[in-house]
Length: 64
Image 1 (cartoon, helix red, strand yellow):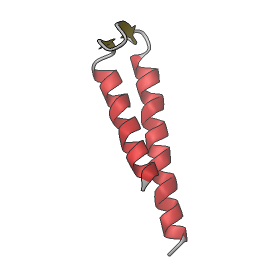
Image 2 (cartoon, rainbow, N blue to C red):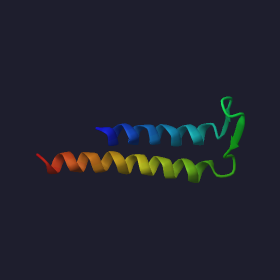
Image 3 (cartoon, one colour):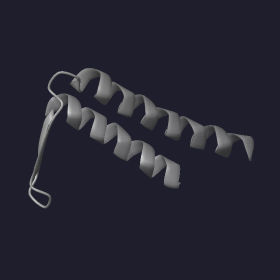
Image 4 (cartoon, helix red, strand yellow):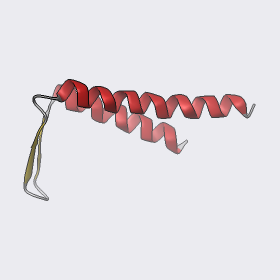
């Protein structure tokens, strides 16, 4: 179950990076700009998230 939650959060982070590639952290007073690489970076996060979810589903089907 934890891998599904991790996968969903990675997919959400990837989509968020693609849609809004600039982040500002008020806690650390830092600015992150992914404007040039939003598609590759977001795509990698989405693929990792799908991989985690697929691994968990495969593991559950194998144990049936």
